[in-house]
Length: 393
Image (cartoon, rainbow, N blue to C red; front, side, top):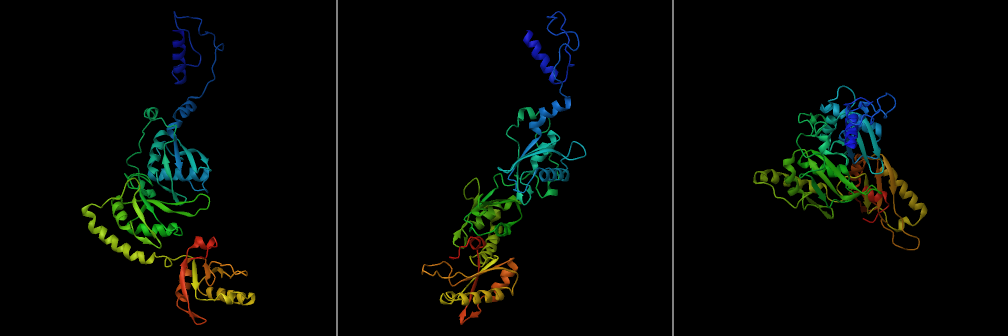
């Protein structure tokens, strides 16, 4: 009985229903609690601090997939501004975010909101673009749904103005859900902009992620996306799956299931989309998709490159000729090995420009021209391969 009374008093104390100094219980062990003030004391925690600690698990939000440049200030500012823009602030004027902790190594953050309701509203921001990439917005692992239910709303307000920040109400969010699309078989040299351009043939994207190697930053050859208009998901999968991209074949399907067939009412739209892709395939063939690097063949012979003085003259001539079309950053002409060993790219000239505008003009101007009686062939060359010094293709 004594322990039960003592425990009950402790519970009442911590929820603020009894004064700091306990009083004796009449007729029930009068000497358990001293009656003289000051003879019995416990550390006093402010009621507000106790409330914040008790609700913290329901006020925190997990944000994953952060860019390396993200920091506590940028995350706090961004989410405070976004919450205000969608009408998600419910705790009065001021910033919704009160604290941010970032794990830079694992690229995630815990964002602490002022109130439980604001944290729930933040759940609607899953997939929002932050610093150029979609981020995941989730509940943290210590979130307790049972306890949180008594603290405030556990779901976002359905009247949030998500369109103000480029999100759509009622969709699956970012890169999650049944409408997430897997895009495999991408040529490794395709940039994010090029993949996006292909996918956006069917409509605007809500979320997009070209998967890259963590160490090198190079594409792994596959991506995920979600369309703003979820009704085009099956159309895009059916139209893009199986098309040739250079020496690769695309695999495009819903990420969580096999190949799906479009509904009958989508057949006309699908036919139009397939015709559009058929035309676009001509642009995306290897060597014709614009990059910042062009490769010239049939320009020089192997013998011309052996002499040092002649080699320097040829290199200078190519720099002068290439510079006519735009800002030329680099010119590379592989030379034969003195010991006769094969060297990749001998006989080719590589010109790297500051932008594709220059490289496109150079390809148009140089392709088909004659140098030393030979007709030059000019094609676009993968930027990643050029940067790595690979000149074999």
